[in-house]
Image (cartoon, rainbow, N blue to C red; front, side, top):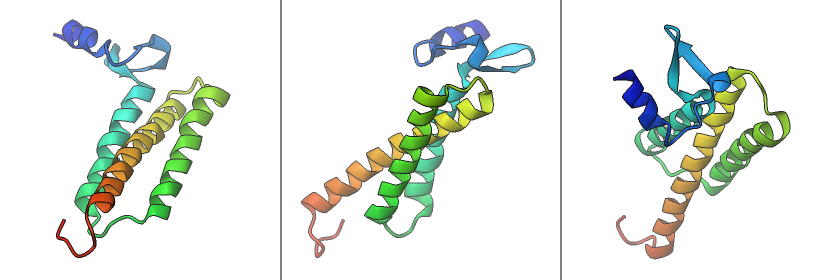
Length: 120
């Protein structure tokens, strides 16, 4: 079963042994950066849509996008750190970046097609 899941996850991750966590002497299914990306996507999406009662302001979303982009692309292109935790944090910021870009697009779409007087 482990081999089947590992092979299936190979389609969404490079699974480099040097970039992966090991649990019980077995390589985790995805590398630390991809794990961070998926965690960032899930966590930030939950924060945006479940826990925020009011709309996030454009400036807040813009700052989150800029900060996440600097962290993610800074690590990939400048640092390329060998440490798994740094790769995980980089992936986490990449997941937050993707989630905030998607949610920003959704908020923009809602504001574009609905006026303030209409119910959303």
